[in-house]
Length: 431
Image (cartoon, rainbow, N blue to C red; front, side, top):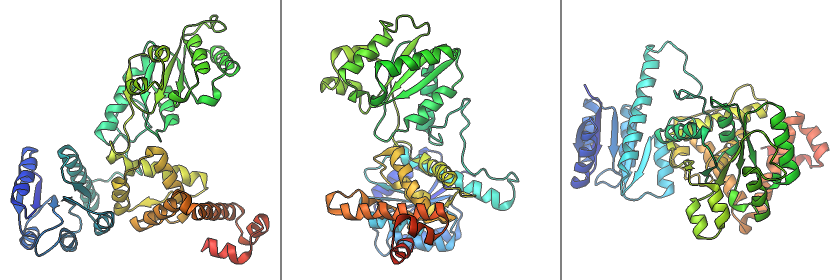
């Protein structure tokens, strides 16, 4: 029997649309326009997933979710609605909703999330029944035929990016990489260095502060002496590099004095925040630089593009921060916490998520819930809220610093002496 989905929406036209979408995706679909009738269907039949609207006569979608979770808590539920405010979305996640989608509907994202939730449920049922006698891995790991750690690559678009990056490893001249704010360039550099290649390549990440004649010449000489076959410079925030620095970069690329005696090939990956043609049209880069950068371009996906990777990426960051803080074991994430992270916009991408997790580790809890993450969000919001909350932001950083020192010293009294903090203030901060 195929996987079965129950659709609950009082709008007959939209109900039929959802029915058609899931039917064409090879699901067995049963639809209902009355939430009370849906409860009856759900009680007496087996479903792999439920899709519901929020505003319906007699019973809201949130009330329906609460009722269905009491009957069969393991069945995932997706909410599709015309409008939901942030408080309602948080409430839905707290009730156990597995995904929230707003109209107009992104069909591809809906089907992708549906498949993920059903697969996760089935894996959980197998573990509970003892069918899987292999211990579950702490974190998901992709099945790509090469090393790739920038993203977990659970999401299809993350895997596609990994494959593109791998195929571009032997590019001949220069490469442009569109890297939105918060992209983890260090991880991408590590992945490039880890790719199997016909040549013994070395990739080095440079920001604007490291681009000068002496530093680059020293780096080139050291690379040659270590026996590398080819050197690739990854230039971060390439649109901020000065004309003088670009002049130096082009001398390297064209093997002009003083780099004309370097025996190994050298090339560049230019990381820009937006499409290169847009930067050129806006005269952010001039003609010479534009031509030198080349025409090969690859875009790094944002976290909103690869939402299914967010939970796994957060677990990686928790592991990393646990090691930094000397914890024996990294905190886990409740299902509601993973869903909460997935629903956030993450405009700052991996950098913002990592900062968020870095703050969450200070909660010092073995398992993080959605409520815990909301507390972190409130703290961060006060810290970056602009001039009106500057005092709160400074207070937040003070408090986190005091907590860190206390953990390192292992004693409140010692921390008070070292920091010159009153004992009552110390207790209030730690509390």
